[in-house]
Length: 280
Image 1 (cartoon, rainbow, N blue to C red):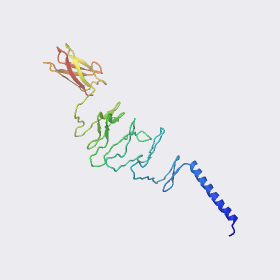
Image 2: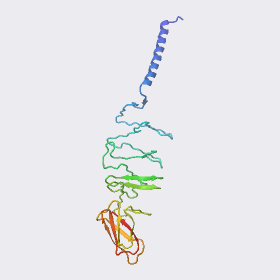
Image 3: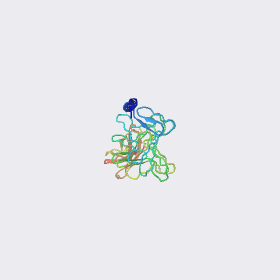
Image 4: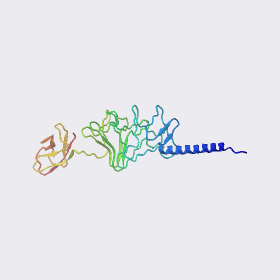
């Protein structure tokens, strides 16, 4: 058979063109950003992606995380935004596991702030709810050696959760529930027909203590942290028996607004200790 030089050259030309196209594709893949192919459309790194009204699903069945996002810089790992609904929703059907878990080695695990990213003021920063009928806890704070739950309110109640059962439960070896408010109510307890506050164990009030009436005197002036109003409720009693001696009166905001004066019915012949309490 007589060979055809033209046909051989054509085959060599096709092979060379195919090799050149392959090299071009490799070079383009190296230069251009990586593209993850989806069922419909593509997802491109380093730019904005628009899915329209469709959602993007990613599923797995292994023991590891389905999706891991890491930012080695100072920015956020994930930012969730929504202009008309919930920005971030987490759901878990496994018993004993949390829907949302936040862990930080040196700071807060989870922070909720209604003033962040244009959220409406007056809403709860973090809201815990038990939607089941099992009687579980809506919000619980626990700590091994620190504060279990901290509530901070700038001008209103720091922790408030009206509920039929247990509104807020803090369990810790140190402080179970800690509420702080510079000018409002740190922790508020309210009940319409039941007990607003029930304490099992010891209680401590910073505006209370012991004072000594010196021998030959019938009163003692006691400084009170935070000051005293003329309408403050003040209480006092003797801590030891003195025949014929008793507390006659406790005068608030006297001789200054930072003190109360505890009067005995007469001068004592020996130093006498009285316990006192200012409630408001």
